[in-house]
Length: 285
Image 1: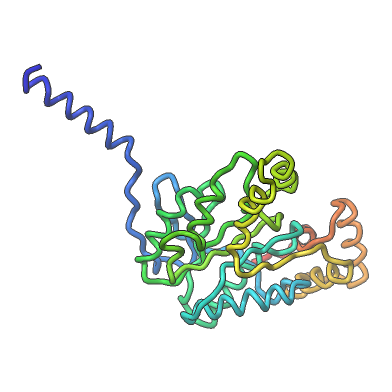
Image 2 (image 1 turned 60 degrees about the vertical axis):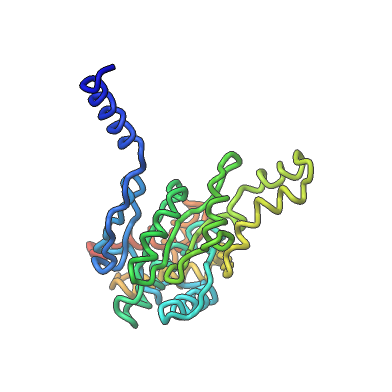
């Protein structure tokens, strides 16, 4: 093959290799906003101008969890050691709301102290690339993954384990990792039981699976609320958003609303508040 024929072929090969190569992460400006979403397709952080968050004072029935996570986050914002946190338990009880509310509360006290960076569960394999960006960004970051869990054929938990604590580098000093999950060990119970029944060494197999949750220094459990707490949630929301409704009527509607959904939780209370606000013609800012 002559040199004139070889050059176009080599050019096409080089172009093909460029297309197969992973994208180069885009430069990050963490001063552009106080919150970002990680877009793994092109390794880019998208600024979030308005975070979907409620005020910390409106979160009821989770006082211990609130105080613990707030104290941990305040220490981190001051440059002191802080733990990764796993918020686990009953659905709709304010796990993700608490993370966003704590971030907002700390930034009100110390403007610009923290960036909240959300990564989706399916993008966990790109977490090392994200940490490389955040490490050199010069701002302290709360890295947040909502509804984190892993299935029986999902090996991504191994890379997360290494990043959180076990790797050579570990997580950067300017990053702390908060995750929410309905599962204490981030994996379904039947998956853990299956490991016990099929593995050659059951105890080692199970230990390897559940040790991911041990990488979180804080475990904050969330449990279903009782009726009094549910009423307190609603009354707090109604007062905060100026919903003019008699307490007896509010409680009667609250009971009916929870029965139709088969559950009492902060999420159910918020859904009722939105319904009431719509009926009363009151916007919720």
